[in-house]
Image 1 (cartoon, rainbow, N blue to C red):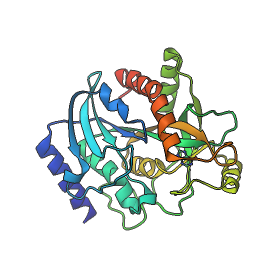
Image 2: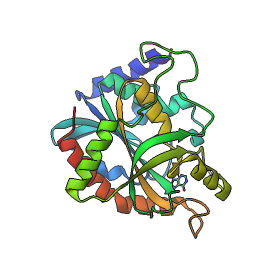
Image 3: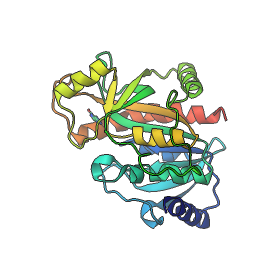
Image 4: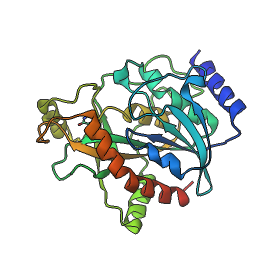
Length: 273
Ligand code: HPA
């Protein structure tokens, strides 16, 4: 049973590590350097955790990293699971169920994505206000286990308003420039067509990527508050003058990761529990 699998993963992690994280961080492509800011680091490879899915994408280390940032106990997911890898939606979001049972209350999700809003430029950081799920799939489809959450969870504030306000205020104090907008998920693995991007623009999307939304849905279902930060690594198809590549995505994400790390680190120093 799914619940028992999750509890076995949790039991294994607790055997290995004493940590009691209260804040979870999902690190997107090229954004893994935030773990360097963590003290008293201990990590567990995904492959060692019973029932944990496994992936092999360049730019992902595939481990849970436990530690502290400014005294706050955090756990970072270095490497996430994507729908386009062939994982089920339950597998994509499996780690979020585990984090919740480890005691995590709030989740910071980051990603690399394409900019649709014409005022954006590659390298911009975007606070995610809301999401659009175009997958035609949802991680909560299937029998509901009330021990996790309700059958019909509310999604009126998927990226908690108070955390967004807090993030914006922190960015202002730190002089970190940022945008905000709506993030749409497209399944991938191919980049979108130009017509798809025009359609997403009409739908109200400011950015497009291949992750984050499944984790956001599950975290809300589990009663966690979510903060989402997207790194615009390229302009989306039809807006960009050149063809896309994963290498370009990683290069720009790496370049933006310093500002992102500074932003997240200073937020954690004053995190509104
Ligand atoms: N589209 C989808 N996913 C992405 C993109 C994009 O343009 N850039 C980085 N991830």
